[in-house]
Each structure stands twice: as structure tokens, then as C-alpha cells.
Length: 225
Image (cartoon, rainbow, N blue to C red):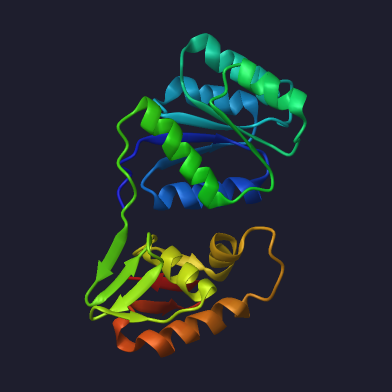
């Protein structure tokens, strides 16, 4: 998928969260740049032309998220979405008073994060809605209706099987590790064996047969398309 939706700068010191946000935004067509602290993040804001900044409140170093937001606001009206582990009302009010466009408390759903980013950008830029139906050959994955159709006929999938298929279809052509699939479908806070992915892949292959364009990438994971 091409990076058609502009640049997002993610300033987050937790690499697990940063990598998960990176994965979800890239699959939506965004160019993502990661920074681990406020200094690096502000440098990227000055060097690049981002559409939005996703900003952790509890950053290491001398500039926390609030201070970074103050500096961003002093430079212009670049949209800012706060991420924080703190659900304190005072922090939320302070973040919004500093000019943050939205505020998301950890742990959060990556899908909700993407939806909030798109909602902010719809207010500030002309960002197209995500694709509702992904079609490859006679396989259709209807993301809005949460249906998989083969030759026009619905194939019954469990909730988790469909979520895995939807995640794969939105990342066509990418070799995804089992851990990336676990993070994307089951969530970053899910604890379990990576073989869970293999079991669900086997079920998809059983139900969809040769229609399913899913290849095993040995030593890595799977690639769709």
C-alpha cells in the first residue's frame, strides 16, 4: 500500500507500543516516523511536514509530552493526539488546554487510535475513508459488514478468524511475523503461544481453500496476496 495519507510522527518511548502504532498506521497508507523522546520528536517536526503528531505524555528526558505539545503549538496548528498511561482528569484537561486535539488512555485499541487519527484529519485535511471491501480473485473481505465471501457466497468465520483475515488483507504483500499478527489481532497485552496464529491460519485455509492467497514465509510468518 502506498503512503498516500501523509506523514505521522509518533513520539513514544515504549517500543512495543510505538511498533504497534507504526504497523497499524502504515497499513492505512500513512508514512510513519518514530521518535523515542521529546528532543528527537521536535527535531522531526521541524525537519518533516507531518499531518499529525501522536505524543506520549510520560516521555524520558527534560521535555515531557506536555512541554513538547507547548513547543509544537508555539510553531503552529499541527494536530496532536496524546497517548498516556494516566487517566487523571487534571492531566486530560491540561492536555486539551495546551491544544491537544484528542486524548487516548493506555491500554488502547489500535483500531480506535486509527479511527481517532482519521477523525482528526477529516477535520483538518481531505483524507479518504478506508476501503470497505478488499477483493482478490473471487475472495472478498467486507470490512464494514464483517463478512468473507467466496464467489459471492458468504463463508462462515469465527470472530477471531475474520479479524485475522481482515488484518492480513489490509497488509497485502507484507511478510508479517506471528508476533505482529498476535499484536494486530489479539492485542499487544495478549499473552499466549504464537502457535495460536498457526491454528487460526489452518482454519482459514480449511474454510477458504485455494481461494485464500496466503503464503507461509519460512522463518518469519505469513504473507497475504
